[in-house]
Amino acid sequence: MLTLEQIHAAKRRISSYIFETPIIQLQGLDHLLGCHVYIKAENMQKTNSFKLRGALNKMLSIPLEQLQQGVVVSSGNHGKGVAYAALLNSKATKFST
Image 1 (tube, rainbow, N blue to C red):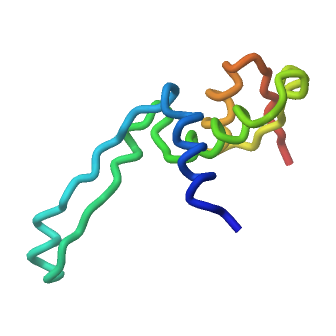
Image 2: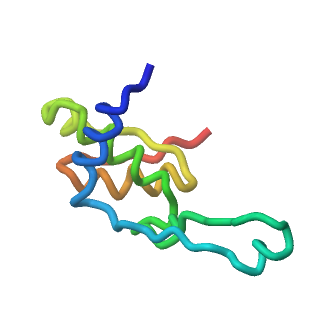
């Protein structure tokens, strides 16, 4: 089970590598739906997706010796996140099926 401390530790681990993206209220939808609607603008992240957060957290948790052996990634937003995170002393190889 994931703990609040693990979440805070992940935030500390990745904070210097990511942008703090804004939460934006969509007032046009508020009126239309009759409630408050917000979005977390992760499309403003360095790789245009929230997937960077998970990729960075995982790769910053791997021992350096293992990280330097490289990682294999798929395509898509997660692949973009891992490729960006590979700048942390690793190499990334695209996996094709």
